[in-house]
Image 1: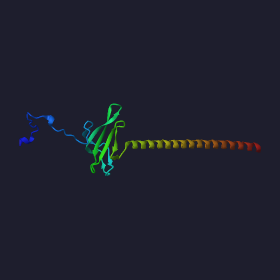
Image 2: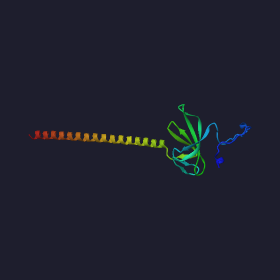
Image 3: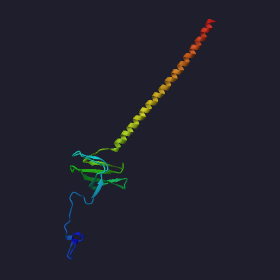
Image 4: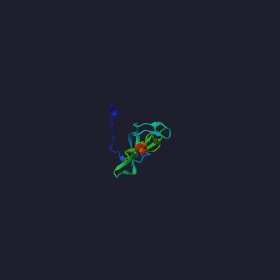
Length: 172
């Protein structure tokens, strides 16, 4: 029973490791790609089968350094290849250190895009500014109109007093 748990094997004195056949894995660029286990940073939808793959799903993936992909000369950009849970089609995402985010390159579409939400917020802020400007302009117009009405009323009252005085002089 103890022989089953042996981790080391016996190599005889005539063993030559250079005669062992090299095992090459196809589909991998051995100098650039490595296997890693990642957790999906955002919710995506597979373009092939329409399956939603939710944020936090763990995958065994291949990590690759993007050639010429350095941000500010020192931060590396990586590309991750993984497969869909239901249809096994390949999905590719890439890091985006400039925006502190990830970009879906192929095989899927992102469910929520924060820059779109930010753009919508900016549009809403612009609309709010326009509405507040319109409200301020209307308030200024109302103030001017009431000031004009008050001035007109004062002029009418002064004119009515002058007419009263003129009539009195004519009567006397």
